[in-house]
Length: 176
Image 1 (cartoon, rainbow, N blue to C red):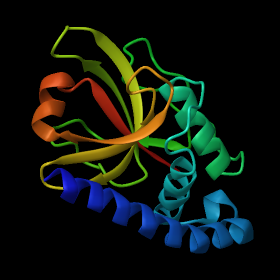
Image 2 (image 1 turned 180 degrees about the vertical axis):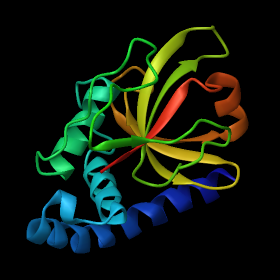
Image 3 (image 1 turned 30 degrees about the vertical axis):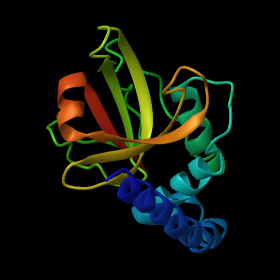
Image 4 (image 1 turned 45 degrees about the vertical axis):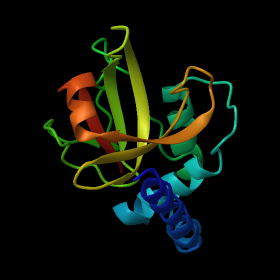
C-alpha cells in the first residue's frame, strides 16, 4: 500500500513536470489570468515540487504564499488568514469551496487551509497545504513544516483521518 502511494506521488510529479513546460509557455504568452484553471494549478504544483525535500526556513502558509507568488509571476498574492485559522480574508483571485468530508474541490493544485488537531497529544495547529492528488480514500499534500522542521514534503492523509483531525474546520481554495 505504501509503495503504491509513493509510486502514485512519483507518477504525479513526473506528469506535473511535463505539464509545466506547456503551462509555463502559455503563461509567458498570456499572463496568469489568461490561463485555464488547470494550467494555473499545474504551475502551482510545478513550483511547489521544486522545493520538495528542501528546508525553506518558513512556516506552511508563508511557503504557499511564495509558491503562488512565484507561479503567477507576482500577479497573485494569497490573502491573510481570518482569526478562525481555517479561512482567508476575501480576495478577487481566490475562490473557496463548501465544506464536507471528503472535501469537494480537492483537485491537484488547490490549496487547503485547516485547523489540525493532533490526536496523540490534543495540540491544535493551523496548517496550509497544496493538494498534490486525491482519490476515493484520501489526499496527498505537498506542504512545508508538517513535522515542525520547515522542510517541504509530501504525505498522504486518509479522509477518515482528515475527518477526525480537522472535521469541518478547513477551507479549500482555487487560485484564479
